[in-house]
Image (cartoon, rainbow, N blue to C red; front, top):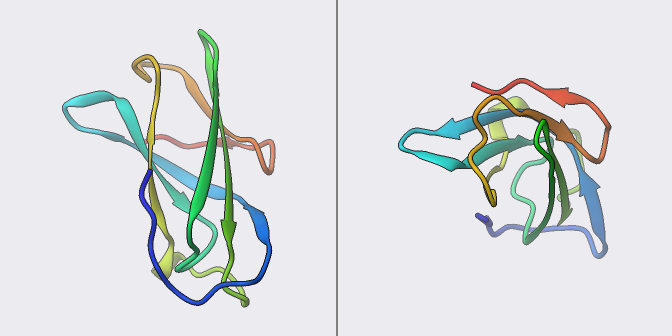
Length: 99
């Protein structure tokens, strides 16, 4: 898990993410692009099955609208390689594209 330091709200908040990227050379790590900027720290919960990886992010969110130009990047370590499994954002329930 990666964390970035910044100003934040006073309570942990579920944070969605809109994209995941497989880490080259490490089939069991993905990086997710969060719908927040400079939130800290992130608590990451991962549930894995044979076909789906569900990821939930909770963080201290900086007030204001999210910006793709400033999306936090969070490394998520899996118990098994991602391979062709689908990635779900557990906060929104959406399937997330993997690059």
